[in-house]
Image: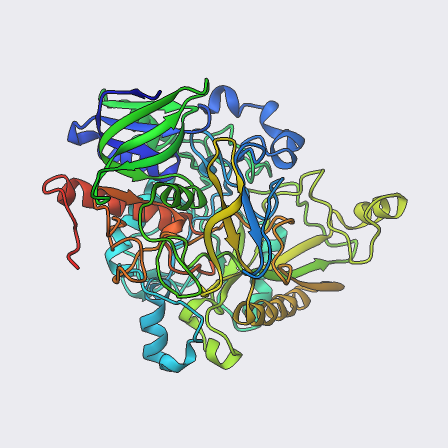
Length: 589
């Protein structure tokens, strides 16, 4: 028998970047705000202090900060004619768990997506005509333009103390920045990080080839910094332990020390950890959420009533919860109807591994999560992708995030995977290897989707979410074409040996590729093809809002955290200044 609790005004399901931002922004309303987080509490002290923090085996290999797939997982297949099987260990992507979520173990790469990314369908048709879009490609617009979101990008960058160089200030192109970016009102809050030898060589090679290199935007503070909320950042140590790790210096922006302490000052805010939400409860009409059911660490079941529910968990978790709760019509790829689970996408990446002579040293053990140099010449609408035979593109860069001793062992193809020859190859190449990588976009396709598995269930008896996904012809062409660009840059850098690579084709869920899962609960302008309106409010259940990368109709050639954070501020603004003043649908159909 579930215990019914006292109602709250606002309920956040999941407490990472987006939940923390919304809790902070709504603190001034005086409403009772409750955040439920399925993982445990975390803080810099004691969780991320040295020497515990730099334990590669614990955090990078055994995934201390990530979802426990022995308790909660999903099933996977490449196409609907196959039988999906459970993912028994983390591989291709690493969802976070615990306070801060993936915002604790991320690298800190903080892009603004381009105006094309937010109006991909409109801008593609305007330039090339509708016939360029394949019949099974479900490319869509967000319903929110870049110009509308620009102030919220700016706010998130200042919250995170992003280090970088503007390339388009109020429409004026700026040398040394990303001249392809959308116009911004302000410079980054911190100057760029100090580049490594690999970055310097990449920059020179890219310029020689006629491209436009610029430093990666990094939520790794290049200097001591205090953000607009009064939160102090330390300076990056270039320790090489960012990705999959917390930061002992509070130099890498994370929600647990930036937005969450501000939210916690609100006497009307409460956080409950180790609480796993089972479903969102709906009234008899199915058009209003009344709260949630959750289970605590002792297995006790509770009903938590709420006037407003915000799904602020990881992208895949939000979609699963909507499917379990009956919010929105599930997507059916056969009839191409329904919306929840539609437009799942990933990152279609490729690149080249470079091996240099023994006189070229990179010292890869020194790095920062988002340290690197990039070009956007082949991203989004910045070039004639139609001439290449596909839609989309990618950001190409040379990053130096660290060369950790267990996983940072670059060796040429054909090297034995263990033994004396492997050890010799490791010693010969560790200081003399680099990578040039393409982070490719992924357009949504009719046959790539999320639904509930008819066979497998989790420990609570709920159907596992099923992922059906593969890299189709459009993405395969893009990966191969931009891998060649990466190889050309590598040769211009002076590499003796260049090995081009792409993500596994067909897509494999086994090797790590990126934790950039998008779609499944997308925003848009048409309820027939989107779950959410432009304010990320559920069309069918207007007192439910959804955050995170699940709202993107297709994936871009960039990391998603920048627009995820910007949209969280956009949603919080809509809640404060529109919804709470007059609850109901913010967009009329």
